[in-house]
Image (cartoon, rainbow, N blue to C red; front, top):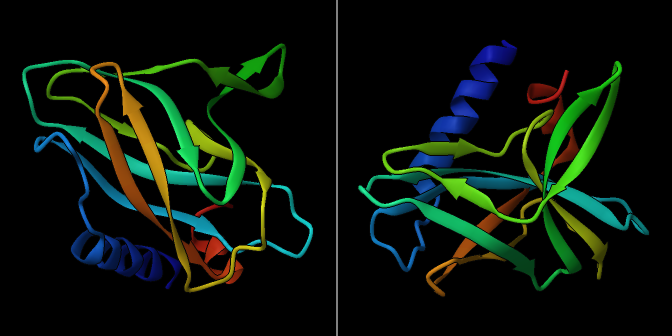
Length: 151
């Protein structure tokens, strides 16, 4: 049943997620985060990015109106200790894809300005090395959905 819910959710995100990209062939799909509790100061955001061109793209920075700071983080394991490491930029290779997902590379929003509520949305801006900005809508999901993504 959990796999069915997960598959259904991904299909819904795929069909209804708006694609907002200043580069016609750099596509952002299914951006989401989970609702926060009152006073929570940080959250992770997940999204899939597809580069359908013959050109490499570099994400130089990210920002969101709902937070004071946004960073790209990767999960690394050093001496059996799991840590988050800030990535100053992220290369999206030609014909490649990047998946921001729980337990892996993700966006970290810090200094949240307000509580994120189920059913709401906000935008995250990705600034590329060529100066273009890709604005992506992020859906806020009920924390109960979290069971389908993080085990």
